[in-house]
Image 1 (tube, rainbow, N blue to C red):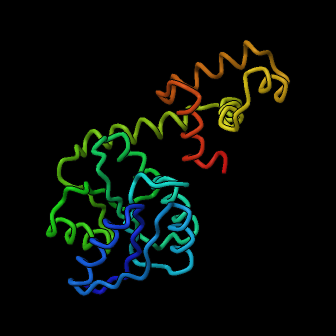
Image 2 (cartoon, rainbow, N blue to C red):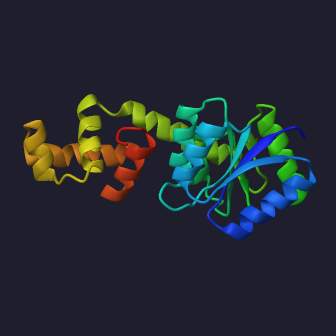
Length: 209
């Protein structure tokens, strides 16, 4: 297969194993990144055909790294490889721009099929994942984001920056009770449950850097 691949994986042994396996298939490994920031930088500099992206990495997780790569180099395809078979996480990865998602327990033939599909521009969802549930989560997330008012987006951005209710109220010149009401509505619309989840969502959506 004529394809240039960047491997983004924090575990050195896994990186080396993937590289060795793919080289046997004649695939060119143009780089290896051990964290999300390195993956973004290398993808921007090397322009691989595909990034094999681990979902859980230090400094910058695979979802946010994927989002930044797609902004920096839209033509680079990203195939997520993860142990997580949570359809909500799959939906988040696809919403960030990932071209495919496969579980790390996949075999050799499945890996090659996933790479071939993504290389050809076909979306790939590995065995063991419920495509209908992934679609439901993704549609809900996009609908929820679209349903936020301009003021709710402002409040969400400030929550994600770590501001407390009183500080948000002062920044927007509104009552603390109004901030609390906005926070409650945002959580309901996005099906999120605490400030950490709100912050993570805001980062994934590009509301803050």
